[in-house]
Image (cartoon, rainbow, N blue to C red):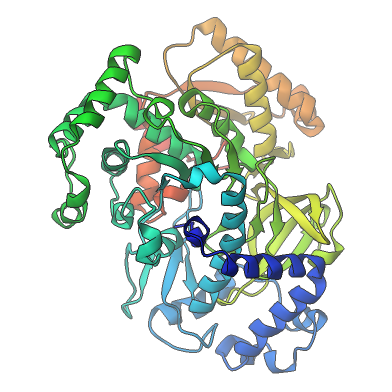
Amino acid sequence: MLFTNLEIAIGQKFRELAYIRRFEASAREPRQTQLLKLLSIVENNQDTAFGRKHRFGAIRSVEDFQSAVPPCTYEDLFPYIEREMNGEKGQLTQQEPVMFATTSGTTDKPKYIPITPAHLRDYTDAFQVHNYQLIKDHQAAARGRFLVISSSDEEGRTAAGIPYGAVSGVLCRNQPAILRRHFALPYQLGRIKDIDTKYYLMLRLAVPQNVSAILCCNPSSLLVLADQLRLHGEDLVADIRDGKVSRQFAVPEPTLAVLAPYLKPDRPAARALERILEADGALAPARVWAQLGLISCWKGGPMGFYLEQLPDHFGDVPVRDLGYMASEGRGSIPLTDEGAGGVLAVSSHFFEFVPEEDCGRPQPRFLTADRLDLDRRYYIYFTTASGLYRYNINDLVEVVGFFANTPVIQFVRKSAGFSSITGEKLTEEQVRIALSQTVKQLDLSGINHFTAAVQLARPPFYRCFVEIKGEMSDSLKRDFLHLFDLSLKSQNPEYRDKRDSHRLGRPRLLLVPAGTFARVRQKRVLEGAPEAQVKIPLLTASCDYMRAEVRRAV
């Protein structure tokens, strides 16, 4: 999926150095780089239906582009996308889409994002730089196998026979054989939609191998992996010893054929695992993969809740942000393990930024990358070679530094990660901080999942859905809610005002049985979201979120 640049591990360095030189030159001249990228996209697509309507042939500058093309949402572009899905050519791009990427979202149905060959090149070029720096900084992690968690590259086909699925699956499938040999798993595992089966098979194949790096999008996937390892330790030992897969997991026959080379009996590995089981009572990633030297996953926004749990399972392993990225495109290139920031990928797409305070104004300012300020937050808009033009991806990012003259940005939250049912203007970031502070103050462990959801009542309030190992006494529940509420009040004056005036009720707690959030995750996958990218929100303004699953569970 990600290590398109693993040539460095086998001595082919010149190509990487060329990528690095181009990257550094682009970072020194972000304004010129962005202008050239924009004009290239416009020129290549001026004869499309969208290009003709918006006079692409007359565009010579950023200002021309902004005058000719209004900001776009998915709904604005969907008529063109729908025609592309039905096989009509020349709608958004001159190049025909090779696939449509399905977005993960949170509670909505997936969207279909066209992916062209040019867009794939732009997407992977940024990975070249990211992975070069990653391996350069963690050379020991490049000596073993890479466990890469990806999603299905083909969930289905459109009416015209064009596949749709996850970009991660396409990138993984397209790796040359010389690079795929570094991967612990075949890409076909990403096509399995049952989460329990998929994760068990990942462990069945990867546990006997020398896994030195793990790469995935969502850190919650790593916790699922650790839970499956703990739950199925004895089954894994037996399967590794005997060269099979437990019958409790229904594996499709075509997948079994692909897995056959990985399923040979390995008695030495089984004996080593048995010793760990005898000593610890369960298997854990830190013990199973003693040479694990690197994890790369998302670190920004609400991911901090899951990141805080990783050391309990994986030990003190360096974690580098995977970069701000989505099905729509690659936004940043992290160069260090510190924080969640990455250099804006100025040579991959054209970007515009609306200051946070301008959101909702009739005439918001649209700024280019060279006009951003440190410690300011902006909503980001993409223009890509796949036909997204001034596309509002609904993401808020923050400028946390600069590399040469290019901003280093960090994902803050989705615009949907915001709730203001009474004017409290509560954000997902504030909920994450309140949850973290509450857990620390109470010395509380075992909270696996959490979501605060709006509940309409008189007055409305936020219901905290919590999945926790063990029990919570009534007094602990009261303390939890008191501290959680207190933290939100201290962070957010609007929330405090609405609470003190009783326009917003005090939050309430609902403990849900183990597996409730897993069912939510599985439901999203069955709806078409890429499993490796499914996000469970810490905050949602949807009154219906989780309602069906909670009714089933309680």
